[in-house]
Length: 145
Image (cartoon, rainbow, N blue to C red; front, side):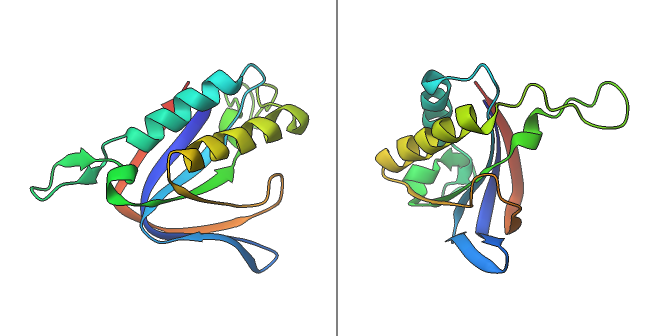
């Protein structure tokens, strides 16, 4: 599982002009699932992300998590995170999980974040989406299981 984590002041995802998910302060997650991923990978990534200390405390140090901040999550499925660009000019997506495998794991990942007390908004799995955000910092990390 590969997740790009972006600290955000605000973010939203639209599909065909309709807002499907929107958050204020929190994290935007671009979530890629590989063929080998399991629920164990979802648990690891959800726990890691919920507890990452990437928000500043009173002294400007990154000592608070999204849970500590009462932040929100905007989770977007992103199979292209498993695009292999080593050969040729067209990415190879063979390592990305097929929708029948990826969608239940993506939903489980979001459910696990929600169970931790986080408000989780999402886009539409498999849809063409427009994602807009104000990246805070910017702070962008990659979490891999």
